[in-house]
Image (spheres, rainbow, N blue to C red):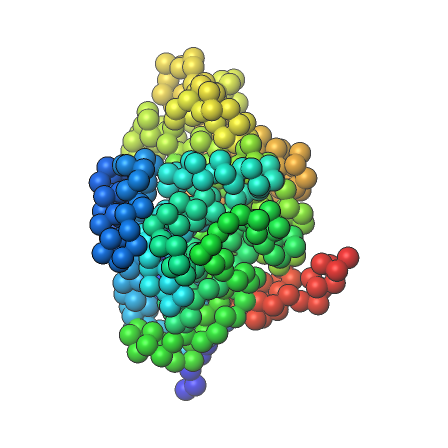
Length: 475
């Protein structure tokens, strides 16, 4: 029997790596997982360690000039690579008669490192939530537009400027995101990124180029990556990777995306008006739109996929608020006592602590979860209802910015598994709420690798811009 084709999605998160293979019909056929070592956060001796490494590599003692690193959250890129080889080796053993055609990588947004043109890391990777680059962010604010996702100390661009301190004056270097570097290791060629990962580096997804204000910054000796449509074919995997993993030597590598974008694709969002609500520790909203919208004050920005956009915003509300009062067993027991068709009359704005970012940008906003009724089930219903009202206000805010109103809402995350909460959300939102069938971001990356998802959004099977999109861009 001839081998059947399959496509692989590789998802790199903060704590682990997952690889999933799908068949022609989009059905998962294999899944492999590996854990990553704990992230190093706020360690007072990081600067000294970086300085020692810098001296060992002949790059002077520049990294110790600022003393202990505040807000530092790092990972060793080699840990990612070992996890990638582990999961791909596991996956290849489970594929049987299936032959992988193409692989796509998603990684955490704004996780960045500097490496040599040959891919050797010159710095640790600064994680998505590393916030050390405060001074660099102030420099960028003098150049970048108000609505640029490249603003702020956690953006890729600020991290690039911060990491550049560790380089010698003539050390050539590439700035690559997590997904960029892994894709490069898989190919044995480095220097490529995608529209989504490069967004917080300053890439303009409207003009499909780096903007003049970014080029006016002195980034030497760091080189910015080439940017491709997510899912675009980058070339073959290296023979070394095929030998190390057991995967077919004909495997090709596609341009990647961010983990949140991959998760949105996995949830099933395709058409304008399709919305995805993630109910984890925080409340994250994603919405497919025909136009990009942005609100820097609220942290709203848009990722481009083909000719459409994924608009996103995130509230500090969410499951973390529930955890402050109830454990899993209590949540299940109390939920059974709630009538989701009845409004509580409580006017809560549940937050785990003071401060909100979306749909209200107010760092001093206090949680509003009083008065607390005597019945715990009524209190829980009020929390469910309050978070649902924040969700409704979030989608309303995106609509005010120019995105469409949601026509259907898909839900993922732990909270999506609670049918009572889903019923309350449906009542508050005035729309049916569906639980997503696929919950792995790796599944969304596999869809990009397969190419059919991109075709629906204005890209052909190789991830190149279709005639329809090319005409749209020319208009």
